[in-house]
Length: 78
Image (cartoon, rainbow, N blue to C red; front, top):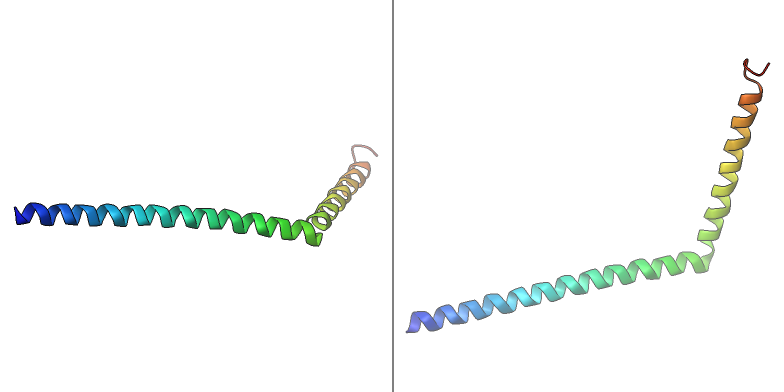
């Protein structure tokens, strides 16, 4: 009888620890997502996203100009 009670207590303890671990995992995931969202909002508010978008657009345009100039000077077109 005592062994049965001991096993039941042990099972209850393991179950509670598993529930706590699941809860901690969920909290960690939620806090991680909240941190990502807060950082994204910070980047938008500070203008970093707009700046990167403009710079990337300029870089793409420069690459197209260089490619066009290279194609115009190629022996095939001469």
